[in-house]
Length: 347
Image 1 (tube, rainbow, N blue to C red):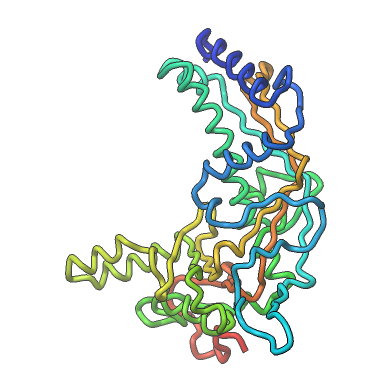
Image 2: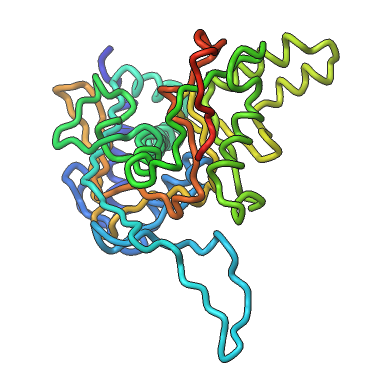
């Protein structure tokens, strides 16, 4: 399909408005964003994905530095006989390192022409702008949950979830605080042939054996759970449900697990379970490094929105993060129960 005249005119108008919004002469050349405009772009991306608004996304000054203390964990009240009570942040040695991060949202001529024929110019430009912001926002989460390395040249065909774009939260903990990750083979089998019959049991194990006592009753403590585990739990409830109320409980999964709020985040590995406070998951962007470009690339028959910046991930308090290594989580009965002497609990 060729780019129709309506779509072409709308693209020109979009490019002009984007340039005007950022105070540049043209959006087709890479331009820097700073000050209030930088804040507006960050807010637009946050608004594109609800889960991003629940974690800690902040700007920092340096490429390498100490993790930002958001002040939400642990006790903050007390007294001192000869002065004022003071509590120091327990994040010593907890550092972050940002990497150059380049995003590109390319919309094909076919899609652009369909958009142009389905609404007004204003709706077309809203679709174009939102598609870029949503793509950028989802990739921030995709890399955060799946990233294991930061390659000089990434391979999106092999690493479809950005495993080589940056080091994400689970990998940070596995490398720097490995005792917070359960690396034993565990089996989820609601028939009783494994280590756990329910997700409640899995989450309770993490909470009771990996999360320190001072964090276990925190109202923000949340269970992050993969879709494969939720599907198994739903099957268990449906198979054993003989009342409408029990079937309704299955439909409400995974809003609560082990008495804590639960959520299936975007691009979260299917067999992974993590217990943490959501604001304990951090994404940092270096101030003044954001660059944008919106360009009509005829050779590729696309309109490309690009977003370049220095970005990275951190976990605020490692002790308030516990998870299973999803590579060692199995659904079904343990094939060799007699040979297992270890338990899936921390020492």
